[in-house]
Image (tube, rainbow, N blue to C red):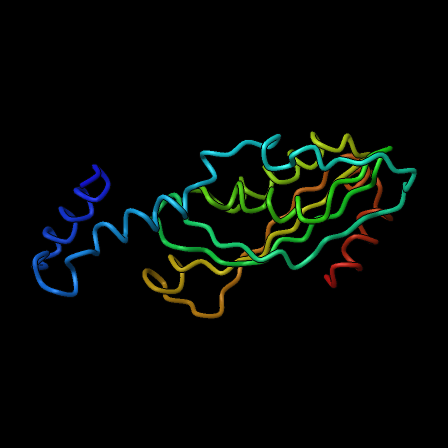
Length: 183
């Protein structure tokens, strides 16, 4: 039994459960495996995720990828927050392979995280890997720590944004991005 499995078994015992009952016999193993998957972002880095999928391009117009679904765990309660990420950037001689936006989002989402930091990390990663003239990232999410416990507000949603370069400095660029993502 791994250390993580042992810890999950201890948690179940502390909650008053009988860890030898049929329904819980393999729960520590399954929970450990699930947690390792949900936090697998710690085991990846930007260059592995991008895998040389940066391509030369003379396109200098805005590129937007929207509606990238993600699942993350808040670092305060270790409860899920679930949402969508919208990314826009202005290429500067390079474009990024389309699937890499989802992979970058997942890399940061699969860590214990707060939404504000995740939004910033995604923007900085796109900026770093592409050398773009500007990037905008908007993340919208529902947080189970707000819905399942505490204030129990079922329809609450948090929206965060980070604008860098031309997206921060030029209102028209920012407005175009907001219009393209429907905000």
